[in-house]
Amino acid sequence: MNSITVRTPATTANLGPGFDSIGMALDLWNELTITRGDFSISTVGEGADLVPQDTRNLIVTGVEAVFNHIGQSIPSLQYHCKNAIPFSRGLGSSSAAIVSGLLAGSAISGLDLTKEELTILAANIEGHSDNVAPAIYGGCTVGVRNGTKGWIVDQVSVPEDLFAVLFVPDILSNTNESRAVLPDQVSRPDAVYNIGRAALLVNALSTGRMELLKYATDDRLHQPHRTQAFKAMPHLIAAALKGGAHGAFLSGSGPSVLALATGREVTVSYEMAETARTHGLSGKPMILSIAHCGASVVASS
Image 1: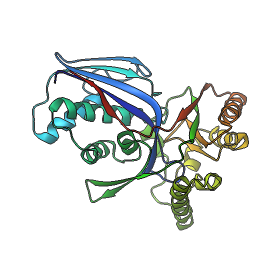
Image 2: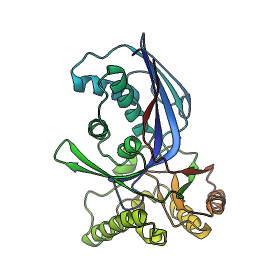
Image 3: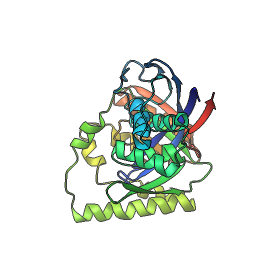
Image 4: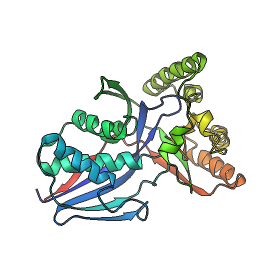
């Protein structure tokens, strides 16, 4: 094949208590086309002036990982990216780049790696599976390590009428800096608090008991520490619940805040936007469906 085009969804990670393990795909997509030819990268859309236009780009990292995995030399390729996922806002833009590169590289190599193989490569690049797994599988996923390099991923069914209501601030988040504020150790009560809520979260989503999400999306491992740098977070979460959301949480490492709703999405969005305004926080509200399918090849020649 000479050219491949793939689409990869945005993702939200943690969903409150599921730190580094639970994620969900959202109906917002980046598109990547790779074509054999002299190396070049062009990007339009979100983050076009921020992403590296050389081999540091995570899309290139993904492609290179495929060819290193199969023991073949890396071909010279042209990369064209159309980005709709907000860049560095806690919506999986880096994971989308990695997965896009892996899937496109797999397709153009002719090998067509399985989802399991793609997940192992992606999670080993990213360091955790909470974003890359839903980007590959779609829907909601739970991912855990199985040994030093292996991963187990399982899908969690979610209601068809579930929507993600977001407020996406006009500020960038650096994942490494956001993780640096987290303590290396946590108390036993906080660990128990999160273990119970992560289990409750999976059960609530799979059984459709949305009334449990208010409690199941709460967290003590990362959100309280990240509030220090993003003081509007608890106010946005409270606004979402006031508007009728079932649960709300910091999306990934932030700064986006995401609420889960099965109705009253417009009201939830309004309450979040108004609260952001009163706190002097600029940004944009979004209402998205859950993406029940993951990344896919949409064109080839």
